[in-house]
Image (cartoon, rainbow, N blue to C red):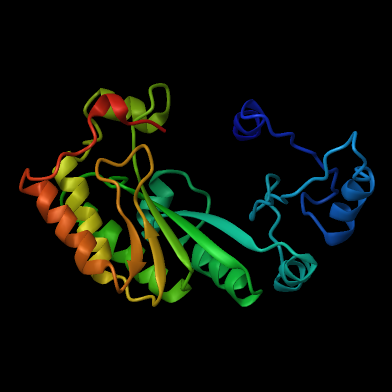
Length: 239
């Protein structure tokens, strides 16, 4: 589905056969060799890897370092949450410790790491607070350069979507989601950290650099909670 979305915007995905699901500089060079840059061919400009890979293998520090040396610059990591219990509940397939180790390997290899987390994933109450505090603790230990906080949306036909539909999972209100965002901002201490919460799923677009913009973004949240700043209406939200 993700590669289909990429091609739907006019980009071409070049696949590479690999015995263990991993890309190496040599494999990337083999693709480039087939696109010789004449006026009739477009030279590939971006390399996309997944760690863990689609077949479950994991890049070593040396393998990541080799890709970085070859020119791969930025890696994205879908952490979702720092809570072990919540990772298990949503069938992420990784523990919090494994997520943290993956992030540290990426940073140590010299990559510009961009992490994504999901607001509202735990539901309301104490579970919400534990989700945010454990996530902030993981980010502080991992030290990425970028952090994006998206918002959970219950998709029909998925286990969590069905749970929400029958009342077994409680979705957070817009106000509760903003409180989660504020709690997250208050407990992050990575400096500097480029923070965004401006995905189509979010009720209040936020973007800034921590710690310089922390006060401005928390003030924007307070303004929205007080009803002085409008939030994104439901019909404008999406995945």
